[in-house]
Length: 380
Image (cartoon, rainbow, N blue to C red):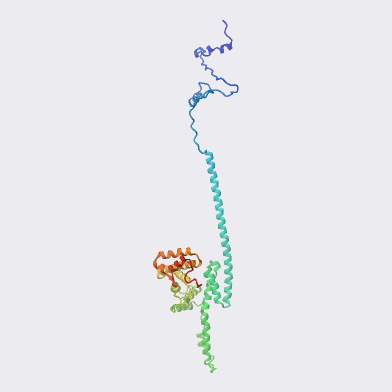
């Protein structure tokens, strides 16, 4: 019997499905191919493949006619992707950097503006100082010491410029004050000498002997430190403390090494006594010298310890009182009330402290009423 053709042998189902020992010792997997459609070009998985088993366990394949309900798939948790989060962080950082740059630029511009304004103001003040200084020197040369004193006081005490603009203005101020203080004595003495020389006029042989009178009427040297010190001591004995202060300041400006300890002690005593007179309104001229008294007490405190210590506190109270009075007169009642209420809260005696009959309590009531300070309504 003849063997079947080759193609018949491969197509024999019995041979294909025989066990391995019957197929020549080789295991032959069964061929499984699902029915394919005309447009299906996707590869198919074999039933025995591990991927097929994994897919079968995770989700069964849906057939075309499978309409059975399937378990819902849990939704994915919403979250910001890492890339988007990183982008937000970078944008926020760039925004912060831009804001910082703009802020620093604004601060730098503000500081430059302040520096420019300050430089302009300094140049203006320096020009005014130079003008007043030149005019003061000219006034001294002309003998107009009062006008020179006013100009140099504006430079030294009002403006208080740095040393490069101040120059020798303090020394010239002291010289002008000394000259104006000595001038009355120099003008009166020759008159007395002239009266004395008229008496022996009928005796022509004795007229050429006025040497004692000439020696007595010799004008003192205003640049002599001993003379300035003696004049200050004399003014202190006569309780002329303002005059003593002027002599002592002139002495310190002209020769600070002349009896420095005694000069400073005498100056501090004169400042303290005169300042207390002004704080309590006891000056004989009746003028409002409260601000002057405060400055004198503070100047004495700069030189040493003010005695009694309560006088320094009184000067502080007077300063706040003066500020509150200015606020009341200017219509700034809220600021005045804040200062006066603080004074009354410190102590009862402080609330009762006053100047020329107007106490802190009176000024507080006036501020609450919204009117001018007592004693100021009439333009005084």
